Length: 336
Image 1 (cartoon, rainbow, N blue to C red):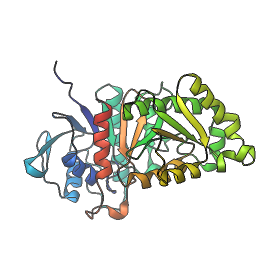
Image 2 (tube, rainbow, N blue to C red):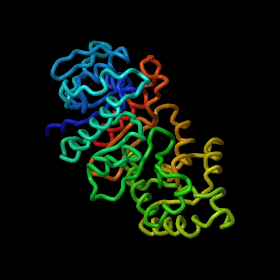
Image 3 (cartoon, helix red, strand yellow):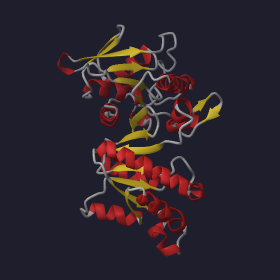
Image 4 (cartoon, rainbow, N blue to C red):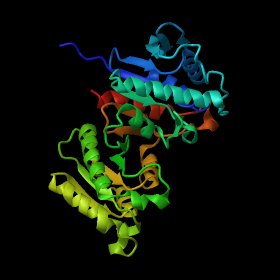
């Protein structure tokens, strides 16, 4: 039986940031399946810009070819015509209208291809969230755009992170802290646990991964003294998840969980954090620059590096490409 060819879509993110250069470098460093089909949803000029900033030789053929060490050749099909080269003249660290148009158009093209079933996964570069507007609708992040354009009929996906000592899921994502409590409902926690369980099974290759849920409030509410979300919402959702056969523990105080990990306690397979910084602030430290954001729960996978545009590093040859390499390899591994 012939091995199915991996189909990865690629977007540069905002070309004023480090996205194009870390993508170019990661493409020649990543270990991807032989014969993987790579499709870049911007112009050859934008990819060439990233290659130049990263010091990666390239040949403007069809397909475009990035040249790595040891005569390694990485062919990339360019999906946007050269006339649509928005962002290719953008200065490093200086976002302009062309750069913002480039980040939007590339993401939309990638989502359209994913929705049509033409990709196994989409790997996206970092964007400027404040300027992420599609068809007049502002979106808080690429996760939300991907959901809306690829599979809006599906429940909201779970934002998952890999690359650290456990798989991390975020119950809530791009919300003000003032809005987090109201957003944490029984249905949301149950759905997040089911999605995290499925993601952890895939990542760890364990049939029954062990999940830990962090509390919403300090000391997980201290028996209701510092808030009742744990008693009223989180604990009942955990019990229902257990009744379905999931190995779930908690809610536990977040500070104590991370302190126990630092003291050498064996980590669980996955952790569900209740809000963005509760999970990501410590997780980015634990990943040591190689974390990957995974959009989980839709028919097509999306991965991205766990960092932003990093304007201060753009074009200086100092940006780490490790997280982008992990994003490429994670997309390949989780879709195999």
